[in-house]
Amino acid sequence: QVQLVESGGGLVQPGGSLKLSCAASRSIFDIKTMGWYRQAPGKQRELVADINSGGWTNYADFVKGRFTISRDKAKNTVYLQMNSLKPEDTAVYYCKLEYWEDVALMDYWGKGTLVTVSS
Image (cartoon, rainbow, N blue to C red; front, side, top):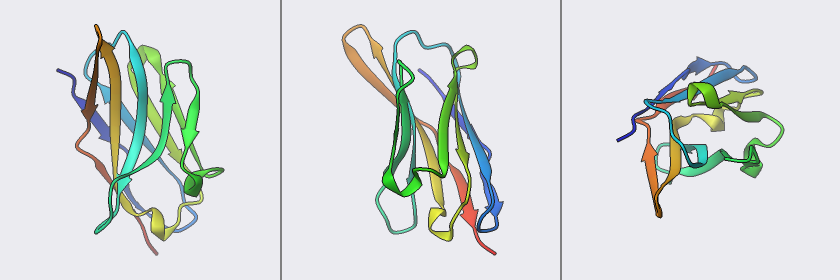
């Protein structure tokens, strides 16, 4: 079992910034990816950004140039720096971890952190 704990959400004005953190409860040996997804009211959950074991990053078009994903392997933590926030970025942001356990691909989700962008 792995628990993922997100933090850093909150209320911010348009144009502002927030930094989300997601910490895994234990060290993971063979991580495939860690990433951030979001779900706005009435919409499906969608990928925001992820980072793989080699450090390669992938971003949704709607956040390119504004959000940056990074990780601290020693702390088993992934971050999402969000700049130039827009009202349409309002959503619950979820952290996802995928890792290999023998030949099985395991995945875990955090409980989410709410980001509200409003004046």
